[in-house]
Figure (cartoon, rainbow, N blue to C red):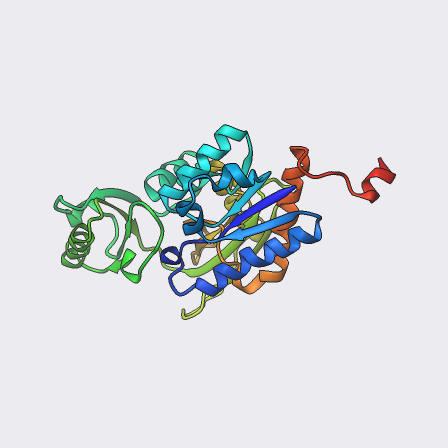
Length: 291
């Protein structure tokens, strides 16, 4: 059995190049322990060699890449060979904000007020319900610090939207700023039986440590991931003074930086389980004896 791992594009790893590289590499090492033959490559290798997937014929792909050109190639492989990727290409496409926010809202995930705006149109501040508004590009997640901007006045809001337009970004998400404790969460799987979950407070903030339900946070993040099909995911949430939980971001396969050894083992086990369910992995000696 062969498994192919594809690293994230450097453009999509601002200041996280090593962390993103390491979590995929360590996941590959853990998969080798499970008896898999693992080949790791940079996204550009796949783009430069149009016949690479047909020659390698991997049984499964695990990947952190996000750009549309490479996702299109992997989607074709998924369809042609009826094979799986983790995360799947539809789920990664679904993390683009203009798709993700409506899907999360439809699933009942608690979100701050938000609205999409065209960057070539005037933004009326009276149409927004909060003084502080986050402006985020409406497609992919952060590639530079300018992709997420906090504004605190009508003039600042209008100027921020205009700057996105000048960069060629046609749509932005306007999202109300919610005061509270900012936390980061990581997850693998989204069912009650197989979900691995961790969270921690972001650095560089004045912490109040407002009390909240960790089980509710786990449930909300699992519901969010399931709604768009992510199996390996992470993101950000706000805990308010009242203990309310608002999800403000959801990403496909983050760096898991604080939990890398533990997370890589969990991800590898999840991938191996997927392979077994599709008869990709032969039973181990122990399994033969016990079944």
